[in-house]
Length: 604
Ligand SMILES: [Ca+2]
Ligand SMILES: [Zn+2]
Image (cartoon, rainbow, N blue to C red; front, side, top):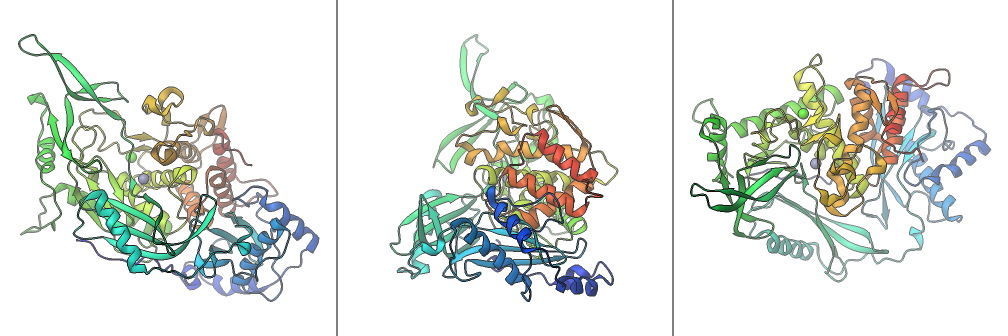
């Protein structure tokens, strides 16, 4: 059903690719990059030592700031490693392992538009990658480091970890697959199984593990991660990182009413907490497992409201579809498949046209979508390999394949996994979700054309299809307009729009679909402007906003980045693209700063 794609190889983009657009700049830039400018060593040293007071972010407001002066005679890679190594030394106050051993360069990109060079690294121990680690380092035209993101692990050289596995990779994969089958039932075909020897820091210890990533679509969508101790074969930790589109706002309730004979009846129904209205629809659980229940749909309509579209949707809901979409002519009779197909093409066009990005991985990988996943599944997902779309239950959602912004959201999870790879938990997970919403919304707006009005609702085309005009699942313009269950204990029982109101509980992986709204509001304010919590923001348009966030995602953010790092990355990106003049920030940079002030994300 799906194509196997290997993701482990991270390509280095050749410089030439980025120089084609600007004629004649290539030679000029290379010459400049080799030129060394002498900056007093005392200045460079003091800036370097002060730089890591805030873990995870080292961006400086002034683009001419030098965090680290390029030593003579070193290549860019050597400069980056020397800089990162200097952070290790400066924090523990003693020399550690030989230069650069701890850091591995996984990506390098020259940006001829700003004359800068961007390097992405991960940390390793005896050549084995450390899970969740990552840094970005930006070099200016003189090869001096002017910005860096990502915390550097200290005292790694003092850790004693065996790096010789006692069990085989195959044994680890067998264990992982057994767990998946125990959880969701027999898997006839895996979309992918990728295994890598990984150091896993967990509960104060470093473990030598095989990280086995298992992607499934049938019988249930999953992107399972198992950390299997390479010494004992035991499972150290596990999670399912399938990126689902929503945290539903509809809750099942017990309805009551009088029947034709005047007798009181109790029955299943749903309540839409957004509108406060309840509907005569419900899903009865008819056995199955906890993760994959048999759902028996129950619907009650007034006949005069039953249109053609609900009929088509409902008829499709009873049969699971895992087959090829076929036609004997040029006409395809499956609307969900046609929507998923055209939407993914449009999202790719957006990334191609606006960000010069060639597919999800930047390297032309196939874009795969499967529709009719599950039975009445109210979700869409990125399972590490492809997009999965449920048909919706026809009440909370119509077919999720119908929404261009949902397609953009899911594909952006793929882009994120190939760039910043933000960890899907807590603050970094919320930033991950928010960037998926931001590019989901912007790709949809792009497909409507530059002159069409801005639209910052998520999933409005498919959400509560029986309730016209109630907007989407989430609102980026006004997050608070969407209600959340009182179980979350949030202010006004609504999505938060200020950092101080963020969700701090454990549900939803630490509120990844909830706190994303806070950063969504910042993106909205940067683009459209407005006053929020007493802070005025002058909007700078969609086209500038998307460039700032894309640059943040691809050049600066790292797996551990949270809200403060997002703020610093957006400010740095704005400064790169719209430089300060005469020591004063540009209107674009001011808008970013004001927007993050407005949502209450502090600079430090
Ligand atoms: Ca939308
Ligand atoms: Zn998502």
